Structures are given as C-alpha cells and as structure tokens.
Image 1 (spheres, rainbow, N blue to C red):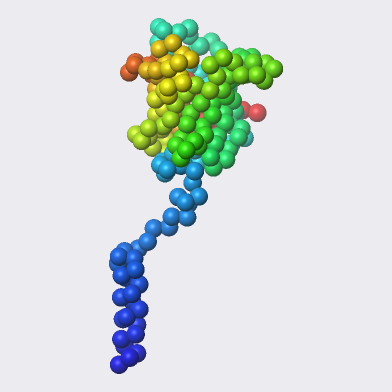
Image 2 (cartoon, one colour; image 1 turned 180 degrees about the vertical axis):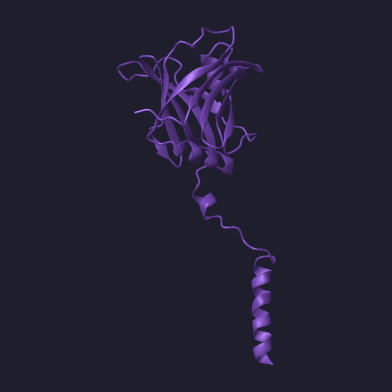
Length: 194
C-alpha cells in the first residue's frame, strides 16, 4: 500500500510546487542586461553580423537635407557583446560616425558617436534615444532622448528606426522627425565586403 501512495505523494508535491505547470528556463533572461527580451534578441541579431562590412545606399531622403545618393556608404560591425554592438558608419572618407547599441539601466540605448580625426568627441556627439516597447527582434524604435532635443535643433521629434530583415538580407537605418520620414539608408547584407 505504501509503495502505491509514495509515488503519488511525490507527484502531488512536485505539481504543487510548480502550480502544476512546466517551469520556464529563465537562465538566459537572468543573464541578459536587458529588461525587455526583444532588445536582447535584436542585439543578438546585430551581433550575428560581427566582423563583417557592408555597402549601403540611400533609399530615401526628404527635401530637408542634401541627398547622399552619390555617396559611398559602408557599415562595419565591430564590437559585438551581449550588452553592446558598435557599428562604425563611413560616408566617403568621413570615418567620424559610430552607431552604438548599448545596455543602460536595463534598457536598449542607441547613440550616435561623432569623433574628430584626433579621436576627441565632436560637439553634440552621443545623441540618440532609448528603444520603446514596440519593437521586435528585427526592428527597434528609438525616440529621441532629452539630450538629443538639446543638441539638435528640432531633434526632440526624432525617432530612429533600425531594422534587419528576418532573413538577414538587409539592414536599414531610418530617421523620422515629427512623424515625417526624413532619411533611410539600406545596406545589402548578402554581399559582405573585404
């Protein structure tokens, strides 16, 4: 009799301890520097491009800025860690820009670093914003933070939309301001360059 009751008692105890449901493996979430899991997934997708460089072209430019259609644009995915990915972005011979995706206080922050040739920061460097909760593993939305509104005229209305195709065939950097599309650059990820 005891042999029959003991296994049932053990099953009951195990079921009560987990609410009768399977427990979720939270080890990956516990190790993530991001509160929102899609932010980690997005960073992981960017990091999958690590060590590669890609050519880009202007997909759209509004009347608010000069066209970059004839410019040579290259992105280099360089620093790739769980809590950050850095992508230097070159336009012709101008190597001053780096797109930085970093974990700050559990949130995903997108920053634009601009440096002089001697490595010192340009005035207004590090503008950007924190990802909101509308994104996915393949697209994130970064409304401008307060600092951006202070250093860029009209920049408080900026939203950067950074996207990666689900098949990893392209990467897009897009800027909207006050709900109006201003600029989009698209990079072909199917043809890494040397």
